[in-house]
Length: 268
Ligand code: DGL
Image (tube, rainbow, N blue to C red; front, top):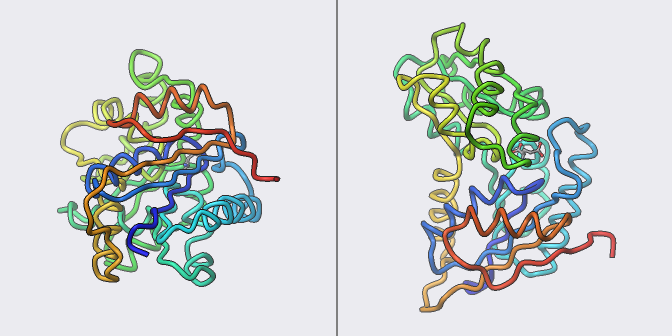
């Protein structure tokens, strides 16, 4: 059991930001990552479709005998976390609760901003998670539908990125209250520097990857499922979309080589 891999899913490449943190914090654990790049983005899709697609990703990873599932996608977490926690015989963790907990730790004035896809923002999953911990928290939530397509095109800085981010964040800046901003989408850490520049250095940015990896470690340790031997892990990355694009992004974003990167089809 302890030497089985940790499964990580996302609608595309954004979850690699969480995978990178897992590799950093748990260097002996093996990961299997599946990104549904073919059907990305999930953000604008109806809830039932996101549930259906996410279940297909999970079925693929369950056949690979994972010991834990990380839903490294905010949209999929918002719509499927509770369902999968009930249905699967392994621990399941999403990225919303860890991000919410980190933001609560950080805020001084109890005004927290959240940016994410339309699906995540409309689901109210962040206000629910935050106010469930502290009902006095004020949440300023904003959907940023232009960010994911920009990141998928590899535009992470420069004039265009700055312009899109500053135009989109106008309502968040105008409210002028928040001292903490949650990046409620796994693609957004790739725009972190631009977002920080636009929102100003008085606002602390929370990206849930780090906190999620910490919680994975705590859960595995508590359940005595942490790998305790000595090995060089062989990570495997799969995409439903174009291999060359995925491979290029994975090689750029991850700090270490992986054992296998392949394209898979979920219908066979
Ligand atoms: N991974 C998604 C999320 O964190 C963003 C991309 C998408 O819309 O599918 O919400």
